[in-house]
Image (cartoon, rainbow, N blue to C red; front, top):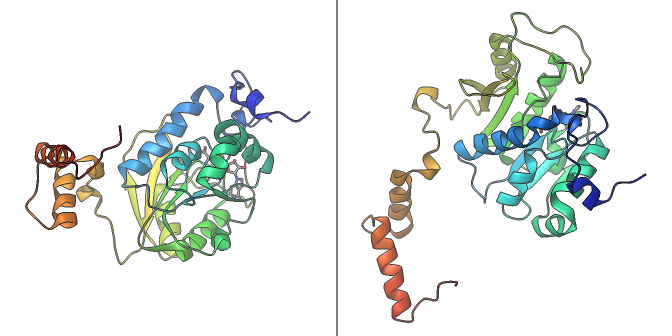
Length: 271
Ligand SMILES: C[S@@+](CC[C@H](N)C(=O)[O-])C[C@H]1O[C@@H](n2cnc3c(N)ncnc32)[C@H](O)[C@@H]1O
């Protein structure tokens, strides 16, 4: 029987087994679905994702994290790859529905060979969350080589993996069981793809490790990483400088000017 959008919206999958045929359980413990989704979006926003950026979500599953990015990004800026077509379809119905699908115009592919070039464009951010935690090394290499093709000089790939004392051996996808790699192996695989690797000491409920892969010509100094700077007051002041090339206005000055314009009838703020 086909589930309708309203069935899915109210079906949280509590108690369903990980990896089972439920759009939430498919990607992990249903009880953590909200947090792991929020975590992915927080990571991207902290690393500077803005609404005008283009994001590619590799192995986007049922849009656990993707739903928040679709909502945030400007129309046409979210792209997802997910071979489990049923999980993606259920996620689209549960989280987006026809209205958001039409309004936000996300683009999807069911490619199962990490063909990141399938969309024929580059991306500002590529998210690969909880995918290398199940992938053999040969698939990680393929994904990273493809990522190299779709990243430009300022792009960032955000990935996770499970750190182990030894590397997983095998050439097949492992699911819902997991694969582990040493940090050195992940660094090597990223470098072999022609990218630079930065490991981040960030939290993750399932102890996955975060790393970034970037163009080696524009390396990121992890110690100097200005995380969350998009939200900072200095960045606001810098924006003021760049946009108006005048004196930096404090937010109070900004408000005062805008309100004065409204009082003069020069500008109508939305009510
Ligand atoms: C643990 S889930 C993570 C889903 C999503 N990234 C998230 O964190 O919410 C792993 C996903 O990778 C997908 N997957 C499996 N093989 C893949 C492949 N070759 N390319 C892309 N995704 C794949 C699975 O179908 C599954 O949806």
